[in-house]
Every structure is written in C-alpha cells, then in structure tokens.
Image (cartoon, rainbow, N blue to C red):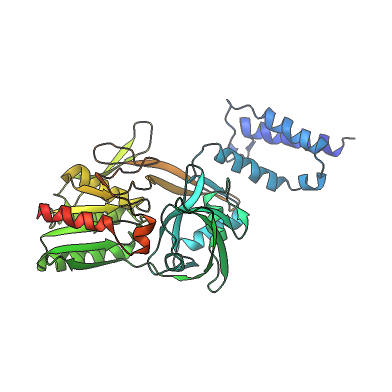
Length: 392
C-alpha cells in the first residue's frame, strides 16, 4: 500500500505524462488543454517541493497546493524583471477587472516602479493626492506601515485604493527632504478631469491636458476650434503630471498638430513585428507654433504625443525627463479565474527611439526647486512662454 507521498508522486507523474503526450478520449480528442513543452525540465521544481515537504518547519503551510502553484507562477513572472507583467490570483483578477471598467475610489494618482522603487508617476488634479502636495517622482516607501520593497505594482494599487472616506497613510521620500514623511490621505471617488486652456500674454494659448481619457478627444477638438478662433499665435501644450491613457486618444490629438499620414508611434512586438499608428487629420494646428512641457509625471500616451511632435515637427520639449512608461499590456484570463497582465509590445517614437525605461529627454532642461514650489513659481512655464514668443 502506497503512502501519501507516493500517491502524490504517482498523480504528478500521470499529470506530467498527460501534459507531455496528450491523453486521448473518445474520438481523438486531447484531454490536456495546455501541454507542457518538451524542452523544459521541471524535475528541479519537484525536487525543491519534496525538500520543503520533508524539512520545512511549518508543514501545515504546505497543505495548500493551489497557493504553492500561484506562488510558483508569480516567481516565474517576476523573474522577467518587468514591473508591468504580473500574475493575479482569481480574487485580485476580479478586483482588477472591476476597477478598469469605470469609476474608482482612491487617492487620485498614477503610480509606477522605476529603478525597483515604487513612486508617484503623477497626482491627478483636484484629488486627495494632489491636495496633499504629492509630486511626480516621490518615492512611496510604505503603505499603512507595510514596506513597498519588492512589491508588485498591482498589489500596491490594491493597497492604496479603497472605499471613499477611509484612510491610507503613505510614507513618502523626496530628494529635497532630509528624511521620509508620513502623509495621511482620505480616499474618495476619483473623477479625472480632461483639460483646461487659457490665453496668456495676450496671444499664447496655454493648454493643460490632464489625462488621455475617452472624453479627452472630444474636449480637445472643441478646445482646438476655440483656440483657432482666438487671438492665439502659438500653443504651450502642458503634459506635465499627465500619466497617459488611451493610445487612440493620443493618436487623435496628435492628428490635430500633424499633416495627414505621418507616423505618431510605432508598436514593437519583438521578433521584427511592428505596427505603425499614423495621423488621420484634421491637421488644423499643423502650422501653429508649439512647445511642450514635460516632467517625471509625463508617461505613456503623453510620451507618445510629445515624441510624435518632436520627431515630425521639431517641437521643443521643455522641463524634466519623462517617466519612460512606453509599453503595452494585455490581460489574459486563465482557466481558474486568475489572470496574467503581460507586456506585449513597446512603443517607439516615429524616429525609432525606445520610450520604455528611457523616457524622453527635454530639449531645454528646466528644474523646479523646492523654493519655487514654496514661492508658487513655475520656471518651466516661464521658459516655455519665452520660447514660444520667439516662434510666433
């Protein structure tokens, strides 16, 4: 009679044989839906499993085989060293899908991982994060006392989000501070604004674009027609603290500034497979002088738009280096309700420059110091006004 370990081993061997060769039933149907690749040796995995079974000090923790499998998958994904490719167990997967469908509650900021450090990509205007003074580039060291070292991005998002009216405490580090500070935030329903614009210096249109939401395309179209009817002789396009959004919206907005059929961005899927996204008109702002403001909070679709105008028209980028989030993720559901969010492509500017991990360097670098913030000064905008005056 076999003991428990021997039974388990026989079952595993049976499963492995089924995966490797396919188990036939009925009229030639293969039972295994996902068969193991022939060139991968999983014996080390099972060797480690049995060592843990025999020697681990808390054997009761070894009883949940599903948890072990999820842990193994998470480790495999983490070894790819891509913070945007993540594994989500069924519960996390369900929450993620609910979040992306509509309105959410939280503190109102985009976060990301840069140089293995969780940080603020951009606070959203008018939200708890913005009102608390959080800035692009701030390091998030702890969430409610829990260290963020080696934390998965989606896990960090789930810890920061929560029901409106509840509290979350973030331990924040900033390069100008001597030590980190705890910042208490009260969550609320987040409504993402689209854009605002105004006339500065009598004939300069200053247009602040907050995010590339579905609503932003229509709002930008209306704002552009208003600008064309105004005394404006040049445009300052402010993409600072804009964490991005929909690629198609960036393509739509870029098409206002470019002639028809110019490359906006290139999607590189690897293995020499690429896809070009091109301007589709109306091009009504193609002859209007433009400068663009960027900073560490300019990410994703912001970098697409800035790169497109720089490469095609020589538009000057002013401010700080952008975040460098130039990749595309696709969510794939697995059979048990868990899912993988996989980076499937990277974005290249029209001239072929990689955005992911590198960001866009400003043509004119202007930093905002702690003293500038205290005195409510904006030297980046001041420089943009000076440059656009020369181009009018």
